[in-house]
Image (cartoon, rainbow, N blue to C red; front, side, top):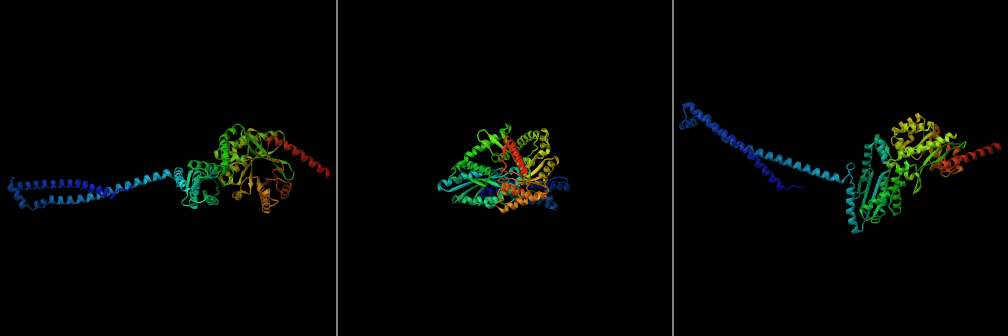
Length: 558
């Protein structure tokens, strides 16, 4: 609020009058003291000259003593000097007081503005917060009702942001959020409201859409924002993606709460289906209800052993012996039936349940291995672990204790990790991997070839196996590029002293081609799909019998 100039003038005048009155009062004291001094000096002079005091003597003293003349002038000098100095002091003091008052007033105004700004903006990124976003949406909806204007709300959630905080620290996570904020602001229009809703969740509100096709342009811009790596700790590039949910006004809702809720639903469905974005439709609401139910029940299902482990064999390409199995988890839900891992593993990673889930899988695997070893089946089991588990400093000790509790050799377990999980924190990951190798637990790189970051680390990592991703294996007979990638990976693995496993082997032709290229182990539907323990044991018996019969027939022919 601006203060009127007349008020400043009145304040200044009052301050001047006050200071002048105080200074004048002290000047009067000086004049009185000077007059008293003159009287005393005159009386003293008369007494010294005549030995007595009389009016005539006082007159003669004043008339004849020149020193008293100088003394007589002092009251007038004091009076003039007092008036002059009092005016100067009063004006200077008043000006200083007025200036300080104005400075305090400005500081108060700045503080009020800052408090008001902080109440409507995110402190970390400077973007509007949820309350300001909802207010702007409410106002825009009111205008849009009258003008029949199209509006859109986009909710963005960064993928695997919790892993960034867990592995690199919250400071690096904050830097990432700030970089995302800057990129979004540079990519979108000034008329678009970009807000941070909290955590790693952002929102973009579009109040100037001419038609629904424009939303595709905005989505393309946002997707491009995340196409290049973000540079954080020690100039380390970090690839970050996001999932986006979209709602349109008035098609998907005619009030703020409905638009936000449905955009949030679309975002979660997009994330679970690994899509960049999804525009809301009524068909996905049922999926959202199921997701919320699963989130609430997953922890209890782990405790109640409602999960099931499945096994898929790794078969030697030369001898057709089953050397190992990969362990896969399923959720046998009472209401929704058998739930595949891609429907609940990402949810477990976001909610912090991935640790208990991994522990359950490891314990169930060790129980099956113990049974097989007792029957003379010396199989090795490989278990997939998430980045949170890999970067747990206590992982080696946890596995050592688990294997010791069931009296299994440490080389019974192999951990399958992905390239990207190593790159979240290469220094810590390598430290833990070396500790695992020291205690005898082997490491396999899963989905090799789908990433690129860890390629430079492959020679340094203490791994014993790489798995070629099935996307290359399944098309290697039809696409020359895939065949080249498969052959190069096999050669690279062997040059580094590693075993090579091919996933996605579904035909005998692919199996023969992989065998000719020297691939060590084969895994895929050609042998069997992942099956529960009982079915796997039945399959293994039948497979062994069939293999024995085939060898006998070959020997007889020879």
